[in-house]
Length: 337
Image (cartoon, rainbow, N blue to C red; front, side, top):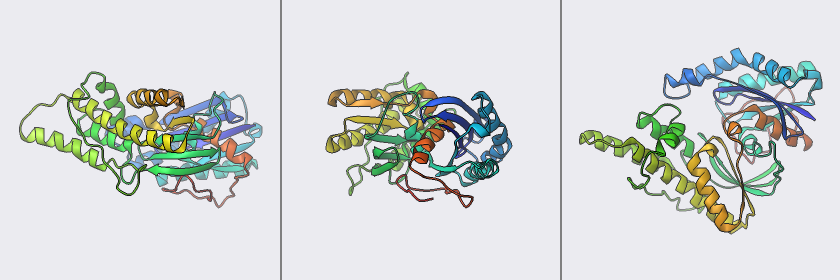
């Protein structure tokens, strides 16, 4: 079964053809990243305009590289939530039009479920497992009971870990995206040079909070500037990255112990972070837990993961009609659309 996936939740216009949820036949991405670098972050209006300009060509290229036509496709899967609403609408409306014109089923896919599905590509991973979904906009610990049955165990109360890393990188005057730059420069720094507290959420043992950490690193920078003191950026980056990763692993370890998880999966853009990967490997080795990561090329936003999850959603009978809309926010455990 071949699924055409379409992803446009942020600044990547992506399309892919995936067979039986695991074999990628094509995976095309057009990004407007370089344009957004000029502003230090994604500009929603620019992103949606670039999606509108690129989506037709990207879908055509995905079909061509997969050596198939729309007639060979069994269903069209599209990201419909969450994300930048203008960007989402481009992908959703294109997918609806293509599905209507080709008389193909339309499968709505939650973006975070897609990130989880990136771990199914080219491997035999099957539920049930515990998953840390960590990206620029989201930080969740979820129990994946089945391919389409997900229960939220913990999540951030404010900023996501990826956002905190990106904003900290910007404050340090590192290249956008800040999280990637922090990961690179941290290898040259001393992660014990600065001490950052681990924020706690009083009424939940699994929920995260990164807003205070983000403020703390900005305050360190401002205080140094006011005193005309020089900070070694690599040390500050390494220390901040360690604090963020320690917070993520601490709650994930607690959830794995309390739930008796035998398998742990890391997903989302921050799953490419080298410090997070190494600490997760240490934690899982200590407890005898099997650990899975997506391939680096599938960590960021892409359509292969949407097509993969779309396959499993389609098998469960999740199909939308022409009334499908896009949503800027939506819980990962929501099953309606």
